Length: 81
Image (cartoon, rainbow, N blue to C red):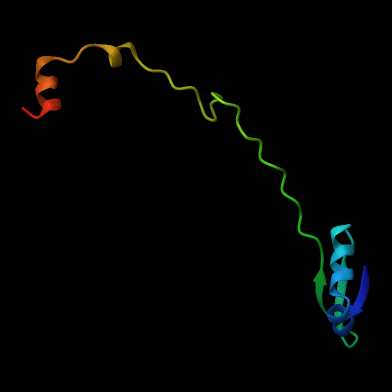
């Protein structure tokens, strides 16, 4: 890891950022005392988008009772009578 001064870091920041993107790391020193580390941020793996119709969680099942006709009492409640 290369050590650079704060003056170098300010003067050549673009150059150091390009090197950091290539994986290099730098120690920034104030005088001879190290104060910070410049290092690349780890790249996140791209999230895979689901295909159309693909489920993301556990498969949901609908019981047959969900398709049963409503009773007269349920219809009254539904229509607010």
